[in-house]
Length: 193
Ligand SMILES: NC(=O)c1ccc[n+]([C@@H]2O[C@H](COP(=O)([O-])OP(=O)(O)OC[C@H]3O[C@@H](n4cnc5c(N)ncnc54)[C@H](O)[C@@H]3O)[C@@H](O)[C@H]2O)c1
Image (cartoon, rainbow, N blue to C red; front, top):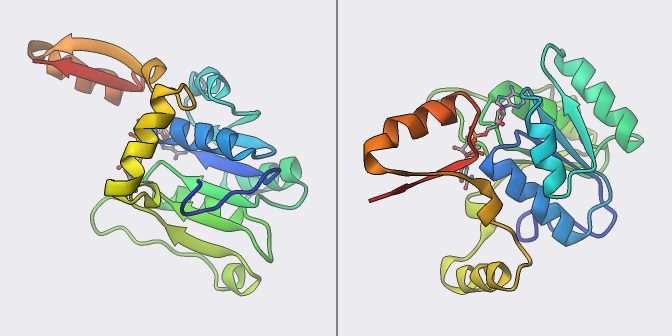
């Protein structure tokens, strides 16, 4: 958000996938002073989660075709988003995220890790009309110099991590942690041992 995308005050941002990663992208957008922060997810329970971290609008994309999701975002952002982020790892969502960007300057950033062997595609028209397609690992943070700054942001309350820990359990319950994750009922479970 701040390192890779360099979001500016007032930019419209769309985040696909509101899990632990997407929610942190949302709070990064809030910190950067983004204008609209639109969250997209198939799980309606994620709307409440997104709003807690600064999401201004929610789109439930369940049952929507790519063109319909893109049209909804274009309407909400008056022409397309300045920045979109894929935090799902789904290659079809990655395409939707690119195509929901504003022509001329919109940038889409892939955070999600796709299944082995999957490929991304779009029509070259999408890029020749000025959209950018990028990716990021660990938000473009430099470990030695940026991690202490991130810890300071947590210690001073600029970023919230604690609310994302939805479950704490012992090692003997680790399978429950996986079940909760697969059912979309947890954001992050901490296993104590
Ligand atoms: N690039 C990096 O540095 C980096 C670091 C950590 C994690 N990741 C990747 O980020 C992705 C997200 O991680 P997470 O822990 O937040 O995962 P998660 O499973 O907790 O959350 C994924 C969210 O995406 C939603 N979703 C799934 N399919 C969707 C679709 N088709 N359309 C809309 N929403 C959809 C789910 O409902 C869920 O809310 C994963 O692919 C993970 O591997 C990347």
